[in-house]
Image 1: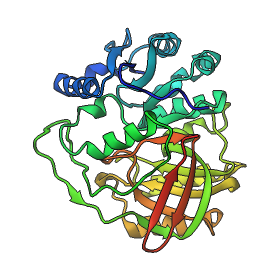
Image 2: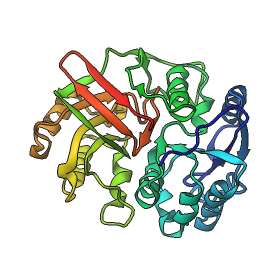
Image 3: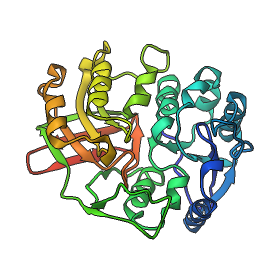
Length: 325
């Protein structure tokens, strides 16, 4: 189930279902709001978006209230999370999924928000988007690729491809917007060749794994699994987390895998990643591509969770085609 596409004049509600907006710099918020306003959108904020406790989050009740209000309000057409964090899965048993199902809307974010997105898709069939937070729109430089992919995903129903960006960056842009370091990108990495079609399921790997064994875990049957992780995931942790996912009963339904580019501090190397994938007999004979533009390294694509995709991985070329219907 796709939500109605966003159009100029629509209201986008910003909520904080994980960490609070209080941790984001004011200048970053100003740039983000101005950029969305320039696209023709009206930006409003959840009542509790700036509330925070000692964990720089807010209570379960406050976060659920803002989530429900955003879906319930007929004037709101899109919902952006402010940022990720660690505790979005606290909300799952308190969410009114029937309310969401009856009021489908664009819902976009990534990282810890994966817990909400996986649960929403599993419970309602609503396709949500692994893509920029509201705070992501506060990036001054090198945002064009991210913005173009977001617009392609949420404002029209035409298919689009996820092509490599010319450059990528892993610098702390939120500390100094003018001191940016961009690295030339020479395409994606082919790990295993092949072709596949399926439903895009995934997001942040360690967060997705929090849903295992619960009523909120989306099915992996006939899936194109897309996974990424942040600097806290070193090669041994990534190996373990991926193996855990592959132990699920329906993991044999995975048709292909996309792996987002790792942050430098994760210490993941090409050699280590290839060895990890090769060690998984469950993944024999399916296409696997890495260094794809999504996750915690900028810029990144917007990916519809539950959307259809086709994948062609060859030694010299990788094509990722996303359907919108």
